[in-house]
Amino acid sequence: MLLEVAKLHPLFGGEVTNVDLSKPIDQAGIDAIQAALDQYAVLIFHGPKLTEEDQIALAERFGPLEGQNGVLATNVAARVSRKLVDISNLDEKDDVLGTQDRRRMFALGNQLWHTDSSFKKTPAKYSLLHAHKVTPEGGETQFVDTRAAYDALPDKIKARIDTLQAEHSIFVSRGKLGFTEFSDEERRANPPVHRSLVRVHPGSGRKALYLASHASHIVGQPVPDGRMLIHELMEHATQPQFVHTHKWAPGDLVIWDNRCTLHRGRPYDEVNHRRDMRRATVSDLDPAVQDQRAA
Image (cartoon, rainbow, N blue to C red; front, top):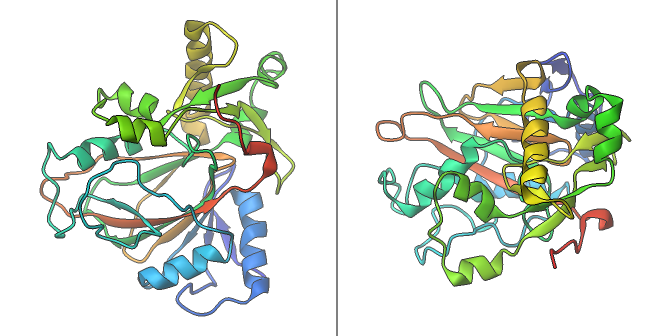
């Protein structure tokens, strides 16, 4: 299959115009999508809303899905399939979450620049986010291609960071917002991990920054020095010339490659508008990123 892709940004991002994801896709089509992801990093598909089963089945064509999607132990029924991540402002009864709801407080961290699951033993390869209900304003998702950001670094900085590792933890990103109300069980289930600050993207062969709001410090360096380096790299990567903003419409499905992108959600009126988004997350089984638990 030859995909018809309209470039959305001078550096990355593509809108696929000749694929209906609600219809069966053969292996040649899946291969073509993966090849396009290697080039564009982010692909946007428009079309009818998919059932949860269809979204899961599509995502599984790209690899196994994450087995544990949640961090919070809420002890309430899940609103969506356990194979998906609920990216909404709705509770298990389909009502809007209260402003003080622990789930809402945790989800605010999605508005920080991050790459999905960098804090897990097995991080994310692809994310497939599907829009069921969108807000009339706000709620966009912004993306950065960290290969382009790496390319734009001075050679001196590239040499400095090439072999460094950062420690990642979900409690770091949420702590930046003042959300620290995690149980001992939740903390034990999500110990910190070490990730290379620079990685070679397998599909394109290009080097990419591997950053996230989950990154705490640089392993082996004084914490203040490492945090300043991470801060400077995040500021560099998220300059306007590297950012593409997607405004959602119902039925949109966006696939992005977490190995070479950053993304963040934008604010919206959570009290007066309902937003229903569901994400399938494909695991990154590259041996190079496995078993990097912090000591």
